[in-house]
Image 1 (cartoon, one colour):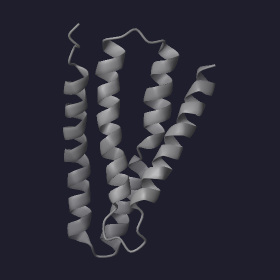
Image 2 (cartoon, rainbow, N blue to C red; image 1 turned 120 degrees about the horizontal axis):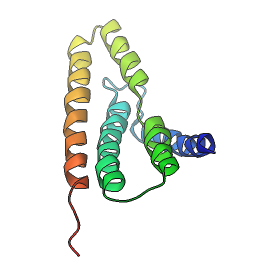
Image 3 (tube, rainbow, N blue to C red; image 1 turned 45 degrees about the vertical axis):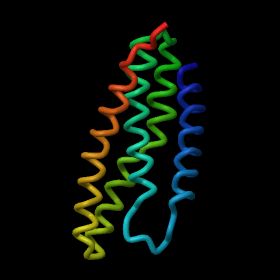
Image 4 (cartoon, rainbow, N blue to C red; image 1 turned 90 degrees about the vertical axis):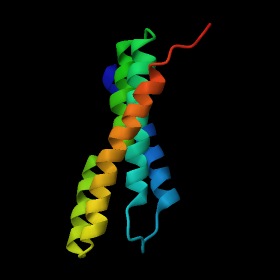
Length: 125
């Protein structure tokens, strides 16, 4: 049954990723903003979800896996980051390629840290 939940959540995450791509898509763009945006949002969400919803609340294991692996895993895309970086370098856009890698890694770590910090806050009752 877990495979079904991961698949359904993966479908939703992939549709969300397509929406982000469509919102930021520009065929003439010099920089892959859609992938960067999806990966930064996904880094935040996974960290927030991991600490905020998993550690502070009791969730069924199937729901944790469906959201973390299915939804957020299909929303983010390391493979596209890799291909777009190679394409930037192939076009001679070494500054943009280097900046893309730097922003992706440092931005991903920053947004994951932010999500982790915000997810770790306990609500006052």
